[in-house]
Image 1 (cartoon, protein in one colour):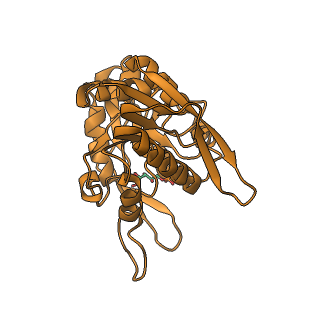
Image 2 (cartoon, rainbow, N blue to C red):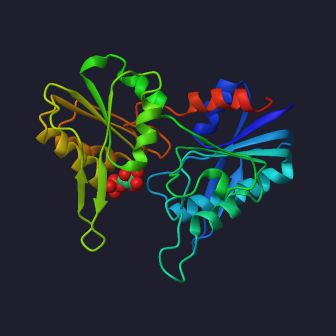
Image 3 (cartoon, rainbow, N blue to C red):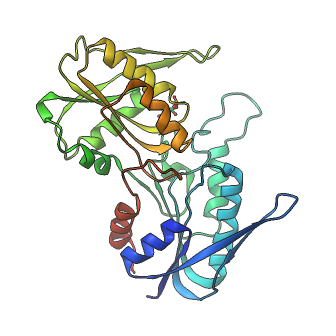
Length: 294
Ligand code: R5P
């Protein structure tokens, strides 16, 4: 089967690992804000893999529309289109809380899957809805926590505690500890709807002498992970490290965590940033080799 990879820098790296040709895109923005993504070369194939990274400076809606336009173009050029969006937009709008609101996670996914045969994302926020509840095509939510854990192999397992800052983070802690033995701890998080203030309840009494790793899927304002770190410090943790998948504000969200003087910060390049330590392209290539004919 003749396959091509189209997209940005991630596409170029992915194509190299899969031994395929990459076709990169050029972008133009018109004065009224319209986008025009263009393939540098037009070529037909049996299968096209489309991957785009959300750039830090880019509006999430522009990212989404650019992806849609490219996937529609790919559909004209190939029998099968595999779409990879490392960070899935609108996944956190997965419920209707007030009358009149849109179920945006579902509506956006209906748009994304329109031109695709298979969809792949990384650690989508499966809070209330699973990926299979939202997509009608085969869709995969690849967990990268095991890969993050590999960056902590030098930690002493007897002295290490992996903390998830809220109930949903239990699966992140479990995934992180699949091949990494450590004590696990999950906090319960409450966010005051009026003030936005975060408070936690937890069962641990003491973390004296422990190397703590706080894991989460997303760092957005940094509020959750920083508050969890404050508790770990109050409980006398020896060191605090952070491991998370999506740095929403790129370098800025990584830098905001330095306030706490962490031992280590490990994040990925699902969203453009220069501070990442885990390149997602390798696990993605491994997954593609297993799941699709190349
Ligand atoms: C919430 O359920 C998520 O897993 C993250 O903990 C949350 O989105 C992080 O947001 P922030 O950095 O703004 O606290």
